[in-house]
Length: 414
Image (tube, rainbow, N blue to C red; front, side, top):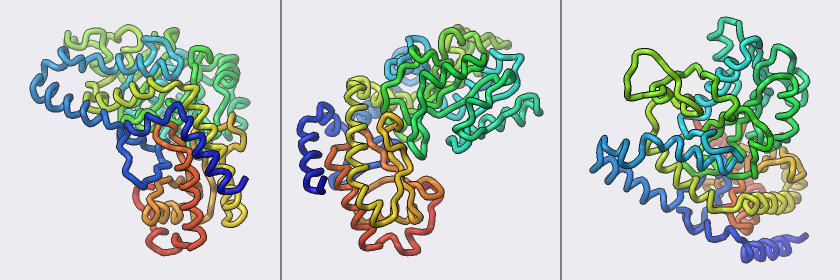
């Protein structure tokens, strides 16, 4: 299809988009094409009012009374139950707390406590590094009693044996967007007697997930991508009710059965509450709840349908650039095999991303060594934005405006 034909199709889809009204509820400056919502979501306008109220009224006027009067103390459970609805979990199986890395540590140590006769934890190579780092830390701290192994993605399930306590896998790969089959993979891991921990960081708020139907054991995810909770937003942890007798190593005071009894000894709370640790991040949770509430208003089947359609549109629009300028699709070609971002490899990926941002107001992102990621966020992107973004990318490539030393010098955060 020609460029004109693709744009005609995009405009038609925009006119019929059931999610179109959500875009107006975000703060997005004119002219910006933001293709990085899979890394940091846009700011909901309602977050500004919520933060002002939390700071000025709840904190400024209510002060410490707001732990009860404004329900600060139960925010992790309240927001966790809302996130549960997005990932197919049951009430009382999710809490919003801490960071993804900390929650990975909790899930791994809880799984090990449920499988005391097993000593190996597995993940896949090329996984997001924090997943492997947490596993390596557990191995080092255990003095060698626990073995952490990273296996090639295609072989990780075959590496499971009678020593495997848990397998930590990413549902949607952070670079390639390749999606694993949640149901089949969970079943295969559990058949061996091991537990499965899913990292849903690039899935929650983007894909229709059903952890209950999949019979998942544990899951973690972050709040600042598709949930639009803001930079450094609290993460979440899911613990199936059958596994809530487990004891994570991080036994902080909010995970105690009676935190304000101030007992000398630790007694774990019942249920998922024992997976809390320190004092809740009240400001971060307030911002996160706005994003979660908005996502709950959207129909996840419609969100996924728009994501798939935008992905197909992007791939079609990129085909001429692949042949002309050397881009190579790094994500699965079939929509059912990928999440809501699409990666392309290019030898000058980093410089191209910088030129796009500085000269054309298109924000994508770079992942080492040569991947450009285009995040497709259905609540904030229009179909025509996808095509306009590709058109501006073509200008960068045609003019070679990326080819200067400034754009080649990498920043501390890429």
